Image (cartoon, rainbow, N blue to C red):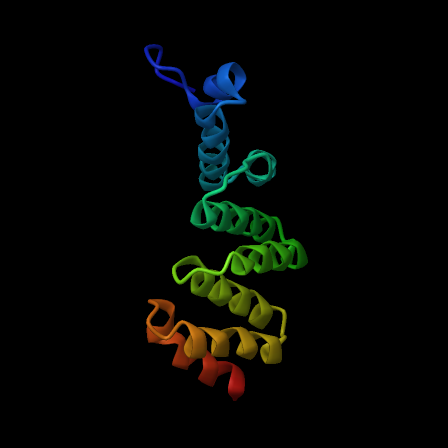
Length: 142
């Protein structure tokens, strides 16, 4: 909402929605709503955010997945995580593969979770997620 001196992100969206700044404001509003627990609003704003930056696209898409997960929509969360994974970069892909694996585990689908974990181990071995992946692999393999 701004502070009286500077406009807030919602005002920027209203006034400059089609500019680069207005579009980026949708991302910030969406992430803010996610952190405030307003998951439907987060989905709305993050879904309206478009970017050519692949990392930011993956993060916004994954955040939509997080909002769906908080709403109890595991299948929708998994679809968003798959879209974030498809961006395919060394930073965000292993992060969302781990999230995908954890959701699959919570659904009792250890076989698919194992596949996600093995991709992290084999293809993203230098990632932060790979440093701890063996414990997840062991857990779903028991």
